[in-house]
Length: 140
Image (cartoon, rainbow, N blue to C red; front, side, top):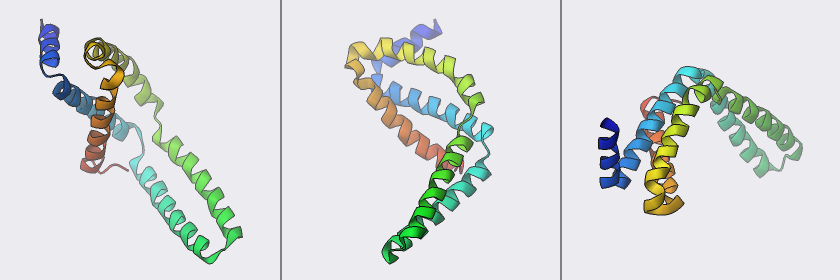
């Protein structure tokens, strides 16, 4: 009964519903990410990354090619650390099955209406929501 009501709402307001669903799923993902990752460590890595980018820019202007190579190597190493710190296997396991089920349901509703183009609305809404949540929660 509740599922039928949700389906009828989604079909009555397809784009609005997709944006809301995207925002809710992104909120869940953001909260889990905040909980399962060390945000302070990620912020420190990003701070160092900005410092390295600034140094690279200065070295490029000065033509210090040997220093540029060193900085690029450190940047590559830092990027690897940042990716490792941002990835949470627990978050993936918790969200994977429910999200796959939700996406399967969304496909049954949106493919007849928009073909595969519905995913662009989802991605766009998700990107906007993610940016807002990151600022709201002061995430790295």
